[in-house]
Every structure is written in structure tokens, then in C-alpha cells.
Length: 159
Image (cartoon, rainbow, N blue to C red):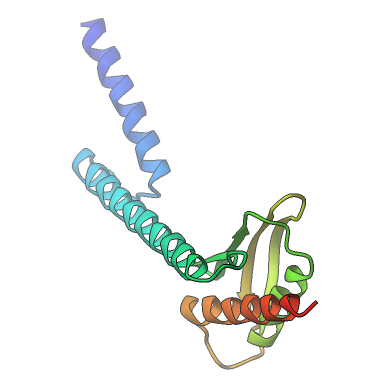
């Protein structure tokens, strides 16, 4: 008897953990598992998109004999965007170009982490400026950052 109750309690704890990890609001076991399955599919799609972005960046950079351009990913959040920019090499001046692109879009940087030591890594959370009426999407943000990177790259080639 104790063993069965213990197993039930452990199962309940694991289901609650799964529920919290997947942000599920479901109350019964089946719904929690269905929500977890959907969450896993969403994660798989994100991984596929990131792999495609990396492959595209490598393809475009390997076709020319220059330093590969940084990889950009943008995810839509509840309020704003999560923007990631990564390069294996240090990129002096790139941060300024990316932040200017955010400003041109009317994005406010709500939170940011930047590393510029041996590589360049920017992770920023940007929220839309409330005063501006136009709404922007993740694709527009990614395009603007990509253009900023391209312009930065062209300016650095001439120096």
C-alpha cells in the first residue's frame, strides 16, 4: 500500500514539474502530456529554424573568401523580441550598428547581454516603442539587423 501511494505521489510531482516546464495550465494528466508534446514540437521547430539560419549564414559566407558574417536569430516574445547575434570572431563597432538599427525600428532595448572578447555575442530583449503606431514583426527586426551587419561589414572591408 505504501509503495503504491509513494509511486502516485512521485508521478504527481513529475507531472507538476512537466506542467511548469511547459507552461501548461492543464489540470489532468492527459492534457499535461499533450501540452508537453506540443511544447517539444515547438522546440524542434525552433532548432530547425536555427540550424537553417546557421546553414544559410555558412553558405553565404563560404561562397566568398571573406570572414563569415554574424548569425542573427529573432524570436517573438509576449511583448517584444529576443534578438541573438553571434560571430566566431570579434567584431569591433558591430554593437553600435545593431543598436542604431534597433533605434531606427523604434525598438527599446529592455535587457541585453554582450560579449566582445574573442567572439561577438549579443542577446537582447527589445520592446516596441509604445508611442509609435506601427507594429513590427520578427522578420522586420531580423532584416534590419542583417542590413546593419552587412553595412558594418562593408564599412570594415574598406578600412
